[in-house]
Image (cartoon, rainbow, N blue to C red; front, side, top):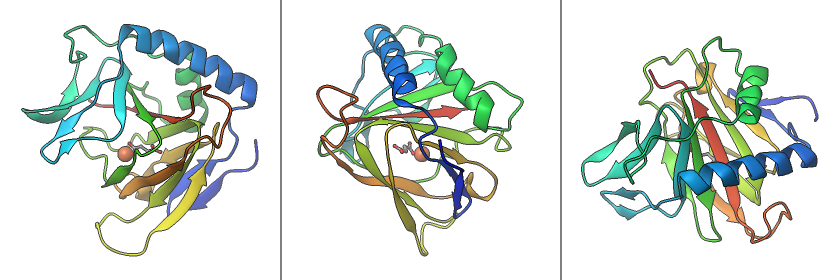
Length: 200
Ligand code: SIN
Ligand code: FE2
């Protein structure tokens, strides 16, 4: 782990998780995904390129009714609990007294990306969003509260953690592309990103 870097208010912890911690996390996430399988969210613009699931009280759903936090997976069952290893990351870096209520799981295959967006559907914006990267490198773009303006990009690597709080809490961000096969963590390649949030 090296010292955190702050870029445009985003606090990046390079190599926050060592290889053993990353591997342990993948084992726990496979258990979560066995209960709450990845699904393809749909927006008005069509299917998203990432596959998603979640753990915790709330997950994020996007379907014909629009998008929202929901206490149930699209299959109608509650989300599995957030693994302790994931909560420990939040406790170490969030600076927030509240516990995360949602751990979104995004899976990026070779051609997946995440358009520039803001995370603004949470009630308590004093709590940050904490992101954990596993597997292949992802090109993370950091912008501004307004959609326009200068952006900066950084390649997030497996084990990196980003805290989006303070002035970055409502800043635009997204993932332009991944470097498929750049990491050996996931045997079939791809990138997993976890985002931890307090929702209510
Ligand atoms: C997100 O903002 O929802 C995902 C960020 C990432 O994949 O690094
Ligand atoms: Fe986001």
